[in-house]
Image (tube, rainbow, N blue to C red; front, top):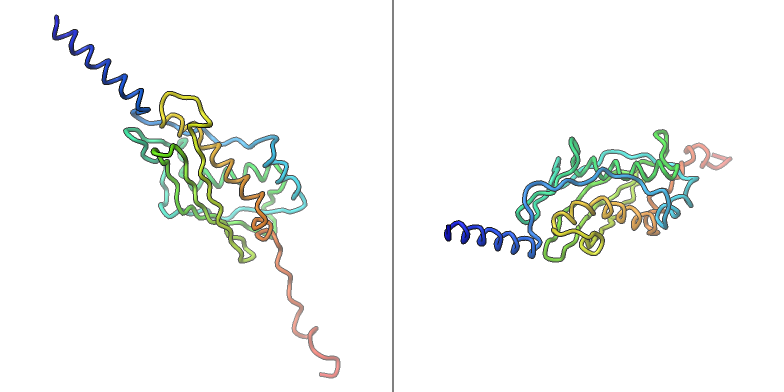
Length: 202
């Protein structure tokens, strides 16, 4: 009887320590991305509603990755998605909501994910991506998003999973509010045919 009580007390103590340290187990699922209907970022996008863009391929330094490690747990994307498709879909959703997306647009934006990870010690998401335009210019936005400050949960990994979509949203807003983003949208001027440049007397 005493041994049973001792084991029960030991298990409760260990569980309490895990909760206190913010540890969690199993798989934590990231939510599907939904575009924002209003807000500073969306308003900034709508100021460029005369510009039309489309999206090309999104690649990653670690291709087809669909989860990241978080202490004793894993943070997983929604089914059949990897970080390339998730972030591309997020970009597309925001641009469509702002009426900027057009499959026949002259400008195409491509993405390459340099790095994505959850930094447990600092309790934040790190997302580093390079966006390249069909006009030849590129831009490297990066976001450090503190998930504990933006989610009330018992576990660090639970907070990380529940705030990843917000981190991606913040990344997009940071990008569209940067003057370098506007350079990606510049349509290259067509050069005049060589015969127009010749002198009348040639």
